[in-house]
Image (cartoon, rainbow, N blue to C red; front, side):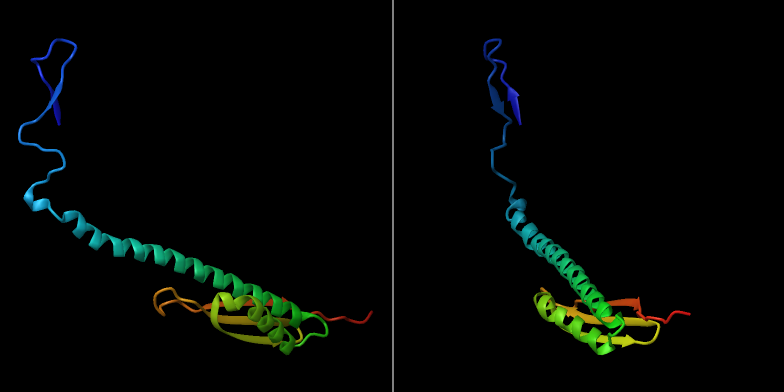
Length: 150
């Protein structure tokens, strides 16, 4: 902290330092405290960053699984479609798009006279550990039927 000197001519006061204070010096008990603070704080900061990135990967994996389920249910629900066609369409989509986001996936497809459904269960890639939840997406659609005229 600087205080003005009073022995200078009026209008030209020169600041002086308080006695006993040197710039850039700390007391002996504070030396190295910044290093200790960084050692404690940086893992927490990096953990939060990795957690945010992992949450983004899980969200993206969920969107890919949902898109694959939609592709499969559209193929299964057409008039001449089958559950196997829905399974193949979802699996093909995941083979093209999911390999960059998903480690593994499982597709199940069902079709009856009224409704078609495709479910995709997948494991996204993990940044640090295998603590990533499995993502699952299901798409359902009415099965197309052509009825004769009454």
